[in-house]
Length: 263
Image (cartoon, rainbow, N blue to C red; front, side):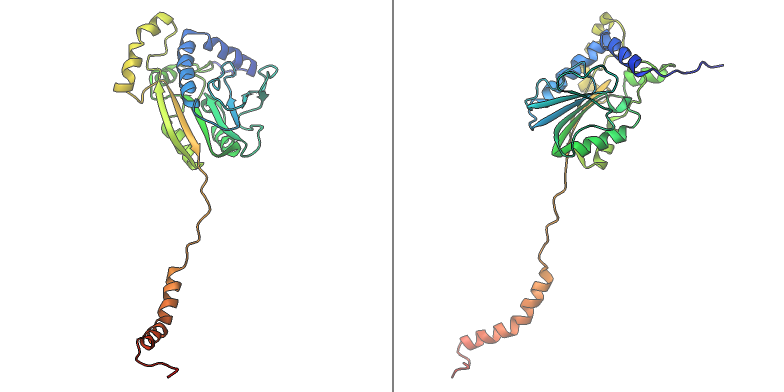
């Protein structure tokens, strides 16, 4: 008889995430992601920026938008300065009020990832941008997840989403993918010394197997189609010109001296 699977409570999930982030594998992943976020947000401007989840890190630190907010999941203690508590499926921001949104590992650990993206589309201003970080199913990390019998602990309990699927969902919401990047090519090892031995795979990954990184970053911009321009009805205009043509031609003959009405 197979054992009954027990899902972790919110408090247990938070402690489980903290343990993983403090592990060599967690530090390896987060160091790469922090560097990518620093680079991708440095030249983005606006008035309001929001980071959803991963409140242990400030991925907006290299951004110059004045009002920066962090949205934490309910149950993560008392919110700090600039923090709000809300589920990512129901973000407490006005429609069309945010210029930049970061989603670090939100979609693959949400029960309703489509709703999360719909909320992102709702609160973003036209031409606003979203940056998504996620675990790649086509990688050593995705293979490790498939081989594990128990997936109750981070990062194996999530549903890994491919970059292609993410882009398809974004396109349905009128987003345009602008940039993307893969990283973390070493296998998910638990000891720091083994991770260091396999770091050579990071140097070769971008060249030899670029889409097989354990983590990806996708940047997209919200496009809003403008109003339809009303073009002049050229056919009707040509018809009017054609109808006036005999009169114009007769006037031309009169002007050339064939016959004048006043004579």
